[in-house]
Image (cartoon, rainbow, N blue to C red; front, top):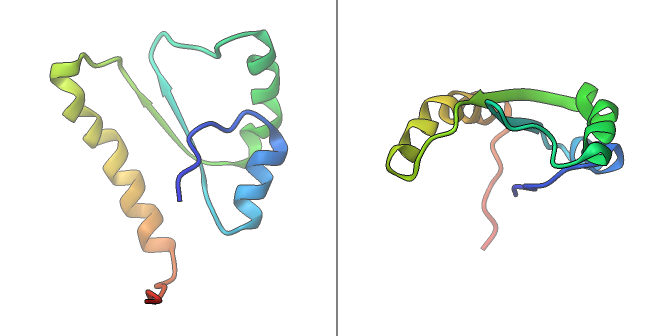
Length: 87
């Protein structure tokens, strides 16, 4: 499961408590949307397991994001225990 918008410490704690990893994705030149979001980020930063930082890509270059994301995903998958699929 992916939670794509974590803004508060209790949300990050819930993810970790349920066996997940908090991944912070940031882009060059793009900061928090507002002052409140900036303030909240200080509370959950200690819970971030991985940081991904990349430049802003245009639509024609979006596949370049792979080089930033795939290594982190591979590391997460290697750390995760195998889970059987229930049908």
